[in-house]
Length: 260
Image (cartoon, rainbow, N blue to C red; front, side):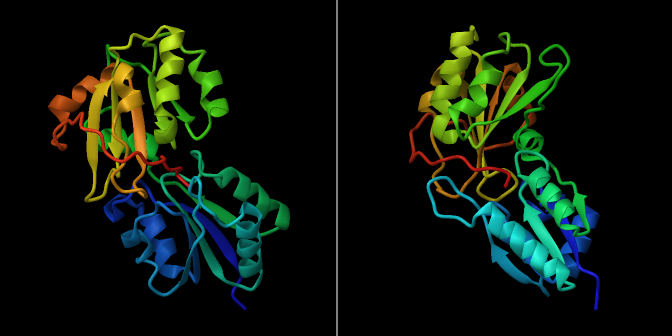
């Protein structure tokens, strides 16, 4: 019997062209793929010989429990199957990849981590926004925006303008994110952006200010991910991107999505 193995694979921000060579190899060799909600269908389709199951978690919706995902991986690997756990972005950036790696190690199942381009950096870059730039920002911080208890301790500690702030899973709480930074002393006219559905044909970017972030448009597609970027580097969007024109027109508000 073939020795089972699990690959925790980062699918990057969406475009199959941005996969690593190793990720592509693991997908083509897989017997079973467990993929997250925001992984692009074109990426999943590359595992054309495998059984493929969606195990994604989305805010406000029923989803597969984390312990169930782990049990499926362990059971399949013990039966000699090559398993790919496919995650948006990078498995170790807000994607529960560390939890799954620990669970596999505890179960005695051999595994590897195949890194991917994290959406936290790739989404802004694809919108013409570098997360660092000499004279504007010498570093950046990435926080989960799914719950205020996750981002408030970090954002409340940041001196105004010291770092680029990147928020994943934060569309539903973008107003609270803005309020937290403004309370900390960040000027309301600090540049801000929301990058929707990066690396897909649906990609678009809203650019405005921190003061208007709370009323920025949501995603027109309820399943579209959104990445919030705050800081002076956002001003480079106008000269480094060929993204869609800016808009202040409100659209349907949708919850942001995790890398996983």
